Image 1 (cartoon, rainbow, N blue to C red):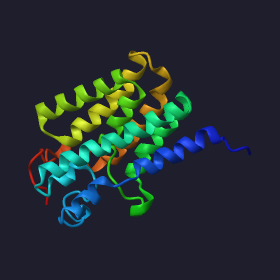
Image 2 (tube, rainbow, N blue to C red; image 1 turned 120 degrees about the horizontal axis):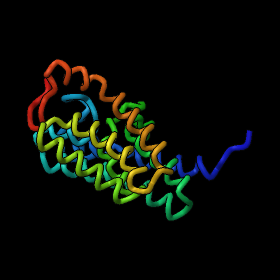
Image 3 (spheres, helix red, strand yellow; image 1 turned 60 degrees about the vertical axis):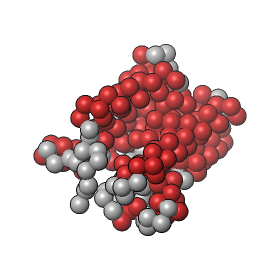
Length: 199
């Protein structure tokens, strides 16, 4: 079976970029220990916020977003739209399942935001609008993230990017799956709001 290097090389690049655990690196560098030992145990910005350091949480959010964008943008500059799609999916996989951390990472919401902007700025704006709107109304990070990833998949064909719908839909399914415990807490009315501590 012939290996399609045009797919695997950008996918590998996307995975390696996406797997950089900025949340863990920043909290350790700041002397706050291992972010995986608190809250949800994830390496994303929401859990970094539970350290009480809003600056680090914001930096984690921006860097996780940036790695998704960089992976897709670089693939587009070097290859084509097919490569961008592979890099997009792989970048989110890298964040969620980083080889360096025993395949235990974050939930991919911020990285997928960067991916959305990299695939097409209208997709990114739809993502950001839904994410920020739901977060402002309900103050529940998980709900905002899940709504945003679904919105990005829906926005792709609506705004003229149908070629990216399959990868964005697959990412949405993955991210919603990774939020299954959050969904259970939402159903029970127990999901913590932004700024609250999680035991």
